Amino acid sequence: MTTLTDATHDPALVSWVESANAPDTDFPLQNLPLGAFRRAGSGEGVRIGVAIGDQVLDLRQAAGRCAWGGEVAALLAPLAGGDLAAFMAQGAAARRGLRQALSAALRAGSAQAAALAPCLLPQAAVEMQLPCRIGDYTDFYAGVHHAVAVGRMFRPDNPLLPNYKWVPIGYHGRASSIGVSGQPVRRPHGQVKRAEREAPELLPCERLDYELELGAFVGLGNALGEPVPIARAEEHLFGLVLLNDWSARDVQAWEYQPLGPFLAKNFATTISPWIVTLEALAPFRRPFVRAADDPQPLPYLDSAHNRAAGAIDIVLEVWLQSARMRESGRPAQRLMRSNFRDAYWTLAQMLAHHTVGGCNLQPGDLLGSGTQSGPGADEGGSLLELSQAGRKPLVLASGETRSFLADGDTVVLRAHCEAAGARRIGFGDCAGTVVAAAAG
Image 1 (tube, one colour):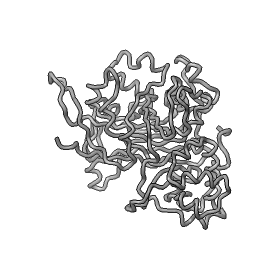
Image 2 (cartoon, rainbow, N blue to C red):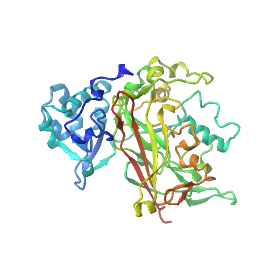
Image 3 (spheres, rainbow, N blue to C red):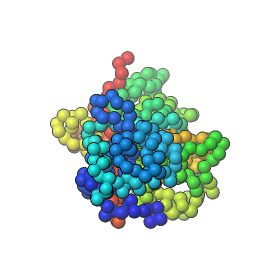
Image 4 (spheres, rainbow, N blue to C red):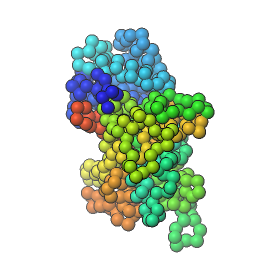
């Protein structure tokens, strides 16, 4: 939507950071995502940076080395102090102001280039951290194609429960086990009820799976008891990351009724380290249209802006590299591709519904989108779908087969946005490697 874009989105802009001008970079000048890092092996405190090409602009150094106007200097202050959440809490106007200042400073011909050049570090030389403390995590179920595909496995005649098309379904997840891309994911133990056994057993998970999701970080909070109207919901959202909602399917099958996921989900969640702001995504906004024969959203889940631009065109992919592929030098293999524009509920609808009962969201809270599958059989956002619950194992390029994940498998989520008249932007990798269950 052109009303959401400004000069920072001009596809003709180039940067004095040469790697940002590569056509396939995830982080051109038009992106400028924020994240937390420390120099590899340094043990220093967490710093906040901006990804630009294959570099990181250290905002602590940038705040001290470069001349900024008073308003911009004030915006940089919490970031220079390593507190991204404090900046997130200032809302959309602060975010737009900083974006405009950084875009001007990093574009070719900037008078600030000489001062900022020493503030760059190669991304390969840093260790990425969680961007901020995540106080609470809610996982939604907004991927309708995933909901239908999984529902058909268990309820062939009624795959969607009657509330799905009326209410954004979600559950409260575990924030303490969220980690950043690159983390090992230990195969969990849990109660498993085998069909041939009379009683359940405590076993290592045998049906370990990934789920392809997006995560939305809350920026501006709301007071307890004060719902956020949908017309203002996006003012409370800061930006998006990729999110892998690792799932123990055999544990889940036994434990999820009647209260939903528990140990099957709480052992690990992985997010990509760079938060792509809503402003960077502006050229890729699309109308949100509900099928005419579907229930239309209730008034508290409907607004003119949500109808005009609530959907976002984000291409999503899952890649897998087995231990054997890695050892033989084979690259990761793409398993599927889908698009976030197919989500049944928008980010604004999720946040508005989350708060309508008076729940108070806080800066740094994380909302998961639910698994983002596409309409095709080869667009499933989980192995559960792609292998049809294990009945049709996938054949990898190495000759191996997979119904569910094996120890040593590395799962990589990737995403990018591209459109005519806009610069391609991406999210960076969200990767995790499965390691064996703990002994015992």
